[in-house]
Length: 361
Image (cartoon, rainbow, N blue to C red; front, side):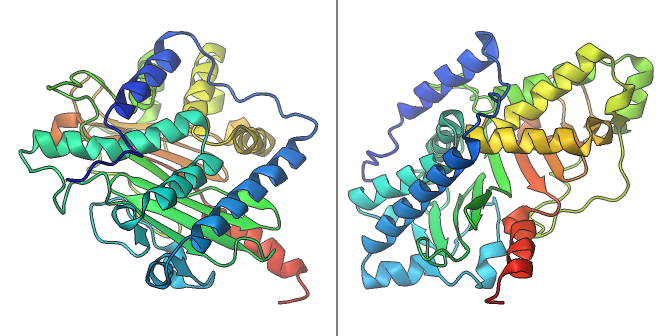
């Protein structure tokens, strides 16, 4: 296997340090208060993203560009998955070093520092999983280079455009419309969730997602837990899977209004764990949107056991958003997480507004 200098195995050590710092050192996961120039910051970030995407496309050969670049209207833009499989897009393995750096820079324009470390850590985790499964590194099934970048539309034309970076346990989807950014679906997973042996034994890619979710459920009294528990058996995976439109039936679980103040604060903190994967201005906007829609519309639901090592699932859902977490496979050492926006995945709501007001359409 050739050396992947852009994603060194030591990156996982950096990720572990970040995770430990967030989980144990008392650093708040609350997004900063929106600044007066938040709109200008968002516009600047969008420009950085568009310019990086444009530079990446300009660096490609004709054959590479045919694999990486699609029209914005292409149906592939709404196709996302988190399984190990062949995808459309330009595979990281086939990029030269300069292209890899541009690809990783593009990730940085869409993620917070924490989110970037998680995303690249998930890629690096493929080597660990390969070792645990007794596979030869660099094979066709578990490989940190088997992640694909696809760009949809023209990043600097002013028209809607988007991009997707995706591979096993990672699907990042961005849509830019009129200088506004949609960042979902956002999927991150980890297998193993806790490395059982080897040089990285004990390390975890998504510790807060697991520990804080369980801590919240354990903070509920018996009557509250009865409300929150929707199944004594955990679901085999996230319920919405890779559906293009996220949908749930009736709201289930315990409502925000049935929580004590300290429990509400704990649930707020759990939501922010997922928000802090995103750029600060995006996280701030989403948190304010949840508040405007009314925290009384937020529900928490749990399925499965409460003890570490037992299969478990939870979800948090409000009027516009859904967080799902599942840890059931591989003896409950295999995490899937996702943030979905019911009306905003793939920029659906932004595009409806754009077309409603655009003279072009």
